[in-house]
Image 1 (cartoon, rainbow, N blue to C red):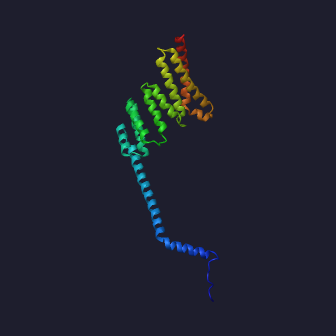
Image 2 (spheres, one colour):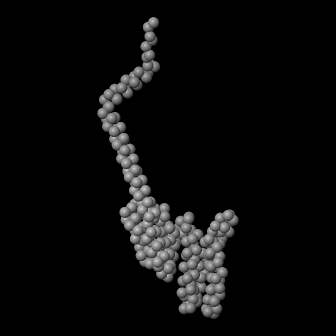
Image 3 (cartoon, rainbow, N blue to C red):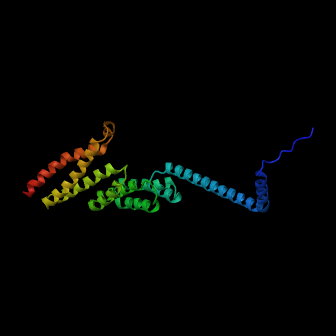
Length: 235
């Protein structure tokens, strides 16, 4: 029995010949293109592997660090990694606890310069504000807290911090200029009230875990007494 030839469907034989001719003429270009793609993928894989190893080493060093100097060393050796950036913050926090506010601020600002795309920048601004507040430089602190206030995660805490700075500014002026003290107290009260209103509009389950709201309510009680005394001095 004679086998039937398997012919290509009508119209596809021409396409097949075109593909065959194209592959024949451009086979070295195609091979070169495939090699280039494979090379790029290999480089990407190698870079990711090296980056992963660097992150792992940074994490291990971060866990072993205990002092501010240890953390600064980790930050220097692991620059560009997640835990290298965290090490700057940790070093600053340890210095802050020792009341070395200027040194702590220097590290927080270094974090802001070195990690422009970090999602934790608002956190660092909040810490910079804390160093100024500890030095009673309330205007400088308020500027940084307002930057932190733009963050969804730090908004409530930043509002409390700003209100507290205005309250402390009022305390500084209370004996010298009662009118100016009242102006500062009014601004502080505005922020405390905003926190209370924010808390009242959220579900009860969230209110339970809102320490900033509770602190604002507590500060409002003492602030009202300060306002009363300032009004007496003004009159």
